[in-house]
Amino acid sequence: MFSSGQITFGILFFIGFVVTMIIAYRKDAQLHRLFYKGNYKILLGFLVFVCLLFVIKIFLKR
Image (tube, rainbow, N blue to C red; front, side):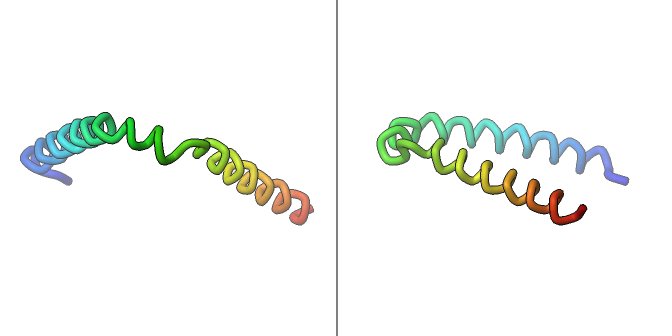
C-alpha cells in the first residue's frame, strides 16, 4: 500500500513534528501559566456538558 520511502518519510515527519511541538510548548510554558490560569475549569465544564448530552441521549432513546 505504501512504499518504504513513504513510510520512512511519515515516521520521520511524525518524530520531527512531535519534537518541534515539545520545544514550542516548553518555550511558551511560562506564558501559558500567566495568561491561561483556570483553564481546567473550562475543560471540566465542557466534559460535563458532553457527558450530560450523552445521558440525555440515552434517556430519550428509551
